[in-house]
Length: 211
Image (tube, rainbow, N blue to C red; front, side):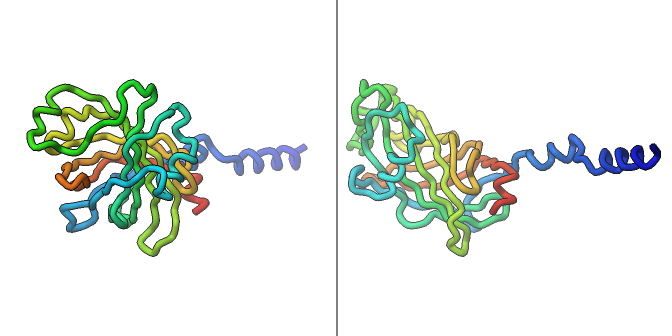
């Protein structure tokens, strides 16, 4: 009997506690910021939606099943350097202006001579973005997907800000949550200059252990 009791006690002592389980499954959250010493994150250029490979990947990801219409599309000009906590990452983005109902049509986002004449009235646009992320050695860490609805009248007349809500991801970022905050300026060329990047990105700690 004493031997059985000792075995039961030893078994109980080796079982993980609730605190241990919670620690193993708690999300890992880190701040997103500009790379050290960088005042400009990078540039995003317009592309033809059905010819850019990264846009095709975005469409085929099935992350936005409610979207029935793709409008203007943008991809980052080369890699964008950011910090996630203290970890250096490079990011390549692919974005599409989308319209779930096709009611609003394609948003006109190229600034006119007098922006106020076009942007005085609120105009809602939604952007879906795929963020392909690598470490500073070029290792593919996965992608995250964000969705953002903005008032084009407020954001594109001069400088604009947006909060991109993370809705999913792959590999290290499977099940990721968070918000990416951008501050940008629309250029006369049609490109977008991203001045600052911030926010917080959280990943599943179990995915961290896999990678």
